[in-house]
Image 1 (cartoon, rainbow, N blue to C red):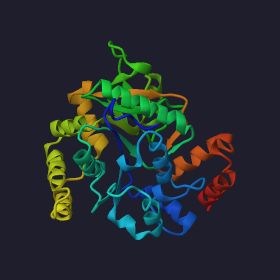
Image 2 (cartoon, one colour):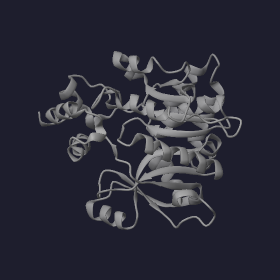
Image 3 (cartoon, rainbow, N blue to C red):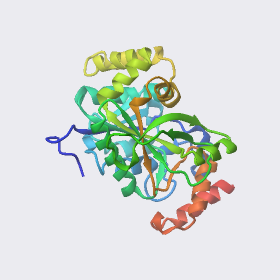
Image 4 (cartoon, one colour):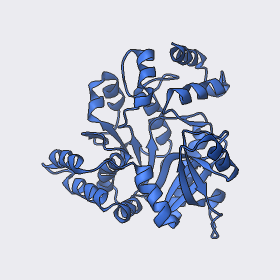
Length: 329
């Protein structure tokens, strides 16, 4: 259900689809015979992970307000062009090279901010597997509402773990906010990336949550946070934003990418904010949702083995068998 602009800020989205997924490439090559980036691959079911992400986002956001960033190198695959061909004009943003998720997020944000400067924006990675999609997006809807109430803050979705996973990032939440906030929204105390098994068990006991990197905030709040934490990244954003729609846009984007240093959004921005201005970060605990970040073959296969032939997978048992067979090859 789309938002009513007369009552609240326009809801927009950014989908991050510019990654190469290198750790999963050997598996995809065995499965398909090519190196199509994982987000464009139909691993289970009839749609790719990117197409599933589009479908989830469109439960809350009009397609014309969903901006997708992809790599120029991806466009050589006909499958990529097919999947992107249905997107609204002007919403597929092509980056000239990969400089990590910091620039990769700010490039589409510059386009979004130019058109919808007062928007609330949700950011979605494109390589997530979610079983209970309706429930998950209900949490995103709630995050929009929390972000509107706490206008200067960024709201992250953290999934309640069911095991001590060592390849995920964790969010450690603080005490419940004193003023009214729904569903125990909490400030972020710290982030922990890929802990060893002993530390992962300790994080579970401490109430740690898996960091989905799905987040919601006002577009202006994101820009302000980048300005305060990383002036070089903010300069990158501003150069591109001012060039959008001009004859120098393509040249400015290419030059800005050549000049900017790679920055991981999580470690280079979020972790810094958690240390310097933690009141700007909130986490919304997500419960009852089967979620996985399919960043590696081990995680992909482990998820499918755990779920087995669960009815929640809508009758795709044959596809699961194909994936497990490719893994065993």
